[in-house]
Length: 215
Image 1 (spheres, rainbow, N blue to C red):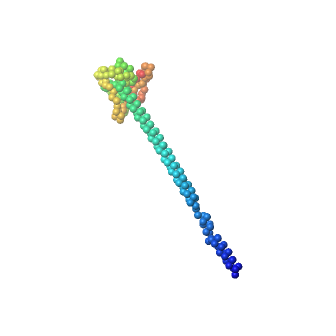
Image 2 (cartoon, rainbow, N blue to C red):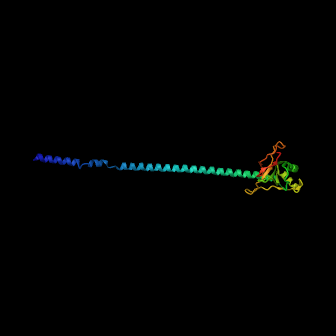
Image 3 (spheres, rainbow, N blue to C red):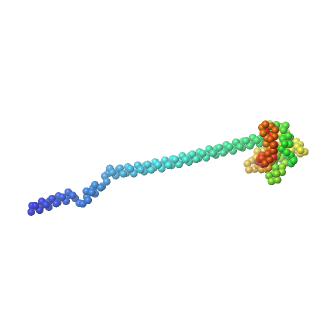
């Protein structure tokens, strides 16, 4: 009887020490507070790194846009400067030129040059021609080397040239898109003096030039 009680007590002690099946495994698998905090820190670091990368990409894009805008502004400024220089150059040429009206249709650039040669150094003479027929329109332009020569040429207003009384006035600077587009007869010469020859089909004063320029 005593032997049975001892065996029963031993069985009870063993069962109590071991506990329910799986209870010790479950306790070991439960995460500790320190482990949970470490995982949270890792997630925060990853999100922070992703955010920094996005900010860096946005800053790089902003820098590219700023560079493109700066380049466009530089190009625009250069184009405006070039246009202004061209306009100033044309205005200077026009200021040194005179318009000649009522020119005889048979007149040549050389004859006009001879008529105005006493006024000063002439750079170019252009007789405007009709762009469809090629016939002279009856007026011309004379470009001088300086303003004083152009002023001297105005004295020849109403003078006789080939039997006609010509009209000599200061050349007007053409307004864009409203200038006359005609075929002219032009000739250019070199700085050494003396004509170089005719240049048929050259453009002068917005038209094909049939003119004369000894310099």
